[in-house]
Length: 140
Image 1: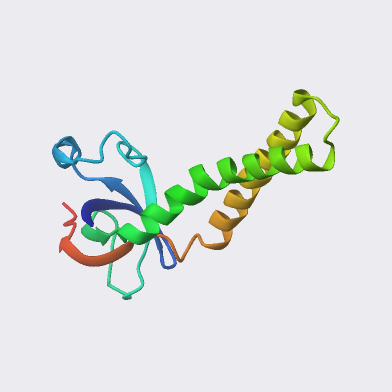
Image 2 (image 1 turned 180 degrees about the horizontal axis):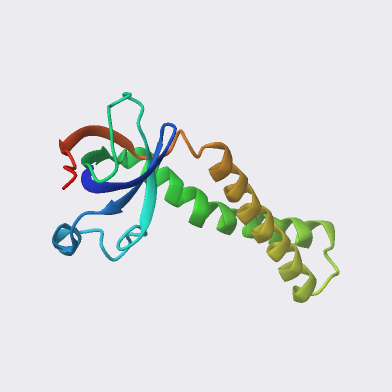
């Protein structure tokens, strides 16, 4: 999936972008789930393109990486909650539901912590990539 954005700051190969216009956001099918609409986000300049502040660029958001990121944030904690709940019930069979639920919430916390550290280690790898410059910013 490709999108258009405007460069608002640069730091080495990481570039901070903002959505160019609200019109493209309005027509997007994923706008209800979009976490960048009206916000700033970063992309990687892997191709070493000559960029400057204010340039309009086309970025590529790999669908597989986007889906997997959503899985890590939403499904991993749910899975670890279930594992924590069932493991606590198995280890402490005479314990009540409150103790089993506490084990589940510990699993949930472990899942969120795992997703957080995964995101930190994969930050540059899972970033959108800048494909090309659409329009150069001209200083007036």
